[in-house]
Length: 211
Image (tube, helix red, strand yellow):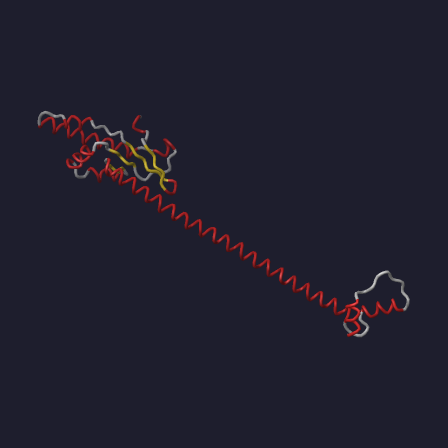
């Protein structure tokens, strides 16, 4: 049960995760390292490789999604803290690395872990740039749509202004143009003795007389 808990979870783009596990037993390697004869070395080395294979199998069969709500991790990083322990296991079993990959397990040591994390950081950077480009495109599109809407509104205002000007001209023409225009006729009423308190502006009177 203790092997089911990941040691580290790294967030990846698209809501995916990178799991790092460092719980592989190195007891066999320690015995190999301290072996006093060739027979003990062989037995300890074999047990060391079997221990790694067992841990790979356990990591490959874990369902982190159900256990911790982790969103479909693509790979589990199996961290072996003692680099020679990983190297000697790979030398003894040349297919060990591929066997791990088949189970979506990537074996790393201190040096390769740093390279792996650097790759993850690069992925994040590229993803951030991609998101920035998409955000710029989205905002630019929204800005263009708003600008187009403003242009349409201005065109409508312009048409309304033109219509108002035409209406104004037509109304003024009715007031001042032609024989018997409205200003002349109304002013004649005043001349005939209609009682008024106000006067039509002089410029309009002159304009109506000119017509």
